[in-house]
Every structure is written in structure tokens, then in C-alpha cells.
Length: 120
Image 1: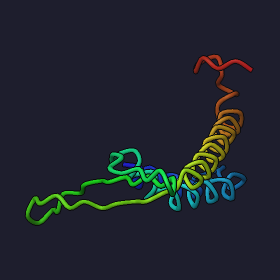
Image 2: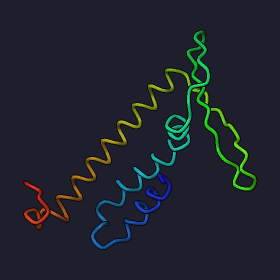
Image 3: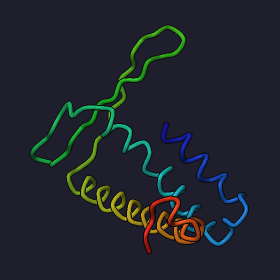
């Protein structure tokens, strides 16, 4: 699902009027792609191990093999420092996305704000 949304966003730079937003869109898409594997393990997996001495968390996620229905586990090990850095990157990306969304609304919808329920 996330990959499909990311692909759509990447293609949206071709739409009429989207040129001024292209660099922001490319940056957001690049960040989302770079963080996708870690995000996927955290969101769709579970914590299967925590090693207190190294402050390392292991997330395990199972993927169904499409050919024979077997579930294959994959692990992702992150230190608590890594997790905090990831949180910071995801928060920055979310802020970028929010700012881009606001700029898009201001550019394309404020002329129609009454019909859409937006206020300046």
C-alpha cells in the first residue's frame, strides 16, 4: 500500500501546475523509500527480542511466500539510538508532508474554499 501511494506521489509531479512542488515531492518520496523497510518491520512485525546490554531491539516480520503459502520470518535489529534517529527522520518527513499538503491546498483549493469548506 505504501509503495503504491509513493509511486502515485512520484508520478504527480507530471500533473499540470505541480512543477513548483517537484523537488519537495521527490525529497519526500526518497525519504519514504529509504525508511520503508524499517517502518514495515516496526508496523507489521513484533518485538521478538530485547538485549538490555546492547539496548538492541529485534523486530520480526513474517511474509507469506506467494508460491506455496509458507510464512518466512525476517528480522530487523535496531538499537534504541537507531530507533530514536528513525523517529526523528519520520517526524521530519511527516512535517514535510504536512507543509507540502498545506501549500497544495493553498495553491489549488483556496480559490474554491467555500465549496470545499476551507477557511483562510
